[in-house]
Length: 379
Image (cartoon, rainbow, N blue to C red; front, side, top):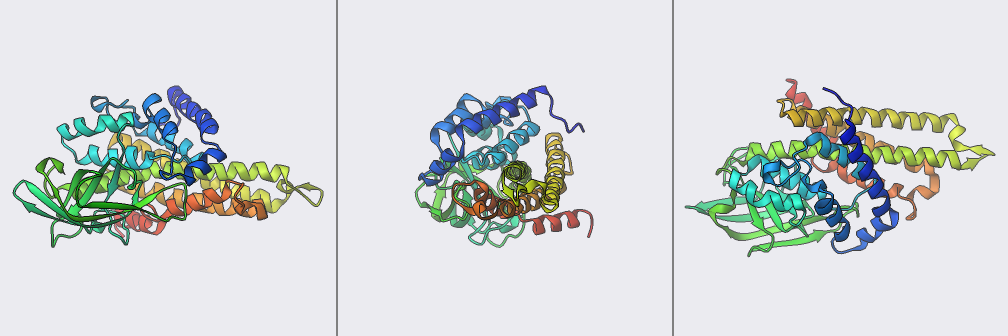
C-alpha cells in the first residue's frame, strides 16, 4: 500500500483547504452554531452540488464521482481541521454507506444520486436512548404483516436527525439479539408517527436529535435489502464511517498542534517566547507523535476500506482508537499551552476540545474499539 496522496488527491486537498479557510472561518463557524440548522445552507450547496464533495466515494452508476475511500478520507481530514459545520458525516458518510451496504440496485439508484448532489440529506438512526456502537444496540422493534411493516421505539444521538430529509432506521424483530433479526428501512422524515427533536449538546458544531416512532407504518419498498439481513450491513457501514470520522479527528488534532506552535512562538513570558521553553517544546513534540500515529492508522484504514479487505473491522477500530486519543489529548494540551485564553469564546481551541470529546464517544470510544481489536486477535 502507498500512503502518499497522488497529484490529483493533493490538488483536491489543497482546494478544500483554501475554500474552507475562506468560507468556514471562525466567524462563519459561530454563525452556523447559532442557527437553527447548525450549518450554512449556502456553503453546503457549494461543497456538495457545485464542487461535488458529497459524491466523492459514491460510485458513478449512482451519480457519484466514484473516486474511492482514500479521497473521502483526504477530504475529511481537511474538514476536521477547519471544524466544518455541515451534514457531511451524517449524510455522505453514515447515510450513503448504509445505503451502499444494505440497499438493492433499485434503492441505490433511487436515493444515492440526490445524496451525491447534496439536494437530499440522509441520517442514520440505530441506537436507543442509551446510545451504542453497532447492531447489538438496536432497540426499536419492527412487526411484519405480509409486505407491510410497523416500527416502534426510540433513537438517541442521531447526527443531524433534526434536519435530514430521509432517515435510515434500524429495527429488530422481537426476541432477536446482536446482528440477528435486524432490518434497515429508509423513511421520509415527515412520515406519520415519526417525531424528532433536537437535543442540547456540549459540542455546538454538531447537532444531535432524538427520534420517536409511534407505530410507524411502512410499505415493502421501505425495506433496505432483505428482511432481517441488516445487522452485518449496519456494522460494515459503521466501520466505514468510523474510518472517515477518524480522519476528521486527525485533521482536528493537527489544527490543535498548528495553533499551539503558532501561539508558543508569539506569546512571550520572562522576556522570551514560551516556545523556547523545554516544557512547551516537549508537549508540542508529544502532540506531533500522537497526530502522526493517528494519521498513519487512518490512512491505512482508508486503503483497507478501498480494497474491501477482511481487515476492515479491526482497522476501523485501530484508527478510531488512535484518532480519538490523539485529538482529545492534543486539544487538552493546546488549552494548557494557550493558558487562560484557551477557553475564551474568541479562540477556537475550546471548540476543538468540545468536538474532540464528542467525536471520542461517537461511533465508539477508545475502550470499546480496543476491546474490538482484542477480540479480533483472539483475546
